[in-house]
Image (tube, rainbow over all chains, first blue to last red; front, side):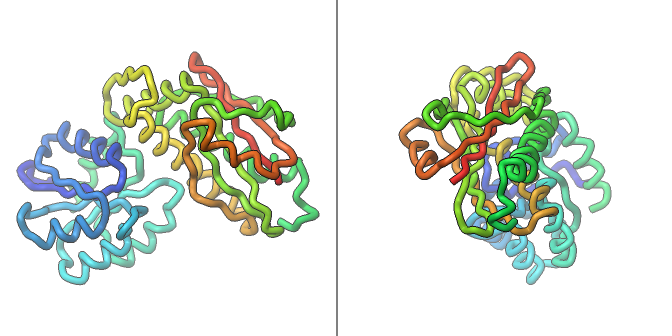
Length: 127
Length: 174
């Protein structure tokens, strides 16, 4: 299971989705989260090393730099960092592509307060 | 879909009803609200079709190149209830905003993006010749006036929400 002290990066262009995931993680005891609105911002945060990111939750459809491009860029320099793709039921086909690009796991949107903790706990045991 | 195949029945069955179905499904999964529709479709007179308080419009283009629209039209009360419920389910809170706040607008956009994503996927699985634009959110009458430009016919299906009113899905045919 992921150490509760670790820092998790949430990347999503929608404030509500970032906030929803932050609250779910906080309810599980993961208080250290950092947020980015798109892939470029996320890469900057990871590359700066300032937060020592341990897991990334990465939305697929985003402006500026989408999740697939971001995943590719992360994997070009870091094969180990766990990256969990966040997608909607309508865009499940993208998961196959992200799998080939080296994602660690995926979760379907929306991640709500009732079911989110159970789903994420399951994912964390496999990372 | 070829031009000669674009009949009222075709549009209703191929485009409008998948939107109704996915709207009802998404109301349940994202807002824990029960939506129902008898799927009865009526022709809405052009001079009576009116923007309510909040709407989303999606361009729908057939192979004849003509741009039509699917419009989901809400009064403020219903939109606020959906927005509050989406946020409550997501955050595990009890959201009680009484107006279309930014939080509610964002929640409605997430809800409707999900509906549009699911409906367009369903439609394109069986019909690759219909293309869709991105959802356009409309918050006032002035911004919505363009919708009726060149429209010849409007088909509408109401969706009822338990204790939360009714909203409408319309197909605007050009």
